[in-house]
Image 1 (cartoon, helix red, strand yellow):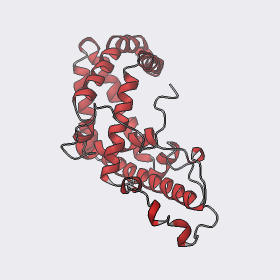
Image 2 (cartoon, rainbow, N blue to C red):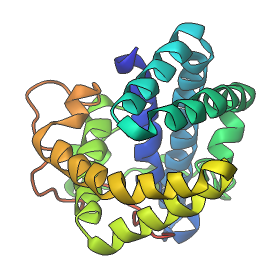
Image 3 (tube, rainbow, N blue to C red):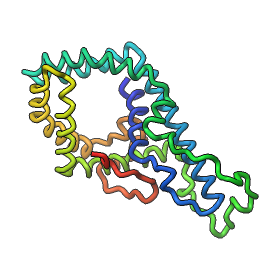
Image 4 (tube, rainbow, N blue to C red):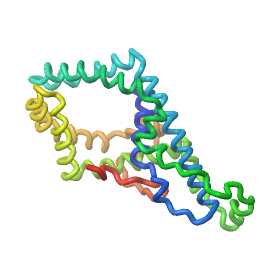
Length: 252
């Protein structure tokens, strides 16, 4: 279950980090406008494809039972907070599954801005072939024509994103903002708000430190089948020159 559910969810996360707003891209001619439109259209379609898979997995009773069981195992390790943690899991997990099951892939991708800013096809969408094809002497390299839906491109985006997340998590300012947001979220548990805050202050920094160590030591992209075995690049300095990126945590 972890593998088939992990890859669609990871891919959605990756798109959230690398999606490039079409309004910010500069076009310099009909050919580039067409390429921009096609790229955004395909990213939107790919988002809907993986979102649909993730929703179907989350609808399965077996998947829901396994997810809840994982959370209960986490609660068991919290010792004095085990009972309160289990109560929260039992209360909010069914609500989460209902919410996920009722959302269509298109609505999800639109709310996440994966499909919101796709421009209309530019005027003159069928220019002469000579205008779309550069002279043979200036033909782009094969790497610049990489299919955004190919496994190789997904692997490249995954490694790039993990590297950027690592850098952000090592920033004390990012850690503080994450803890602050979690503490503010404790208001939803009402009677357990104080204990919720204590739990976050006690375990939040430890969890973030362990997350950094996990990302440094393990190749998450290979584990979740976003990359084939043998491409261990997660913790290696990574160049982002070939992949358009959106700044991570910019709203935090």
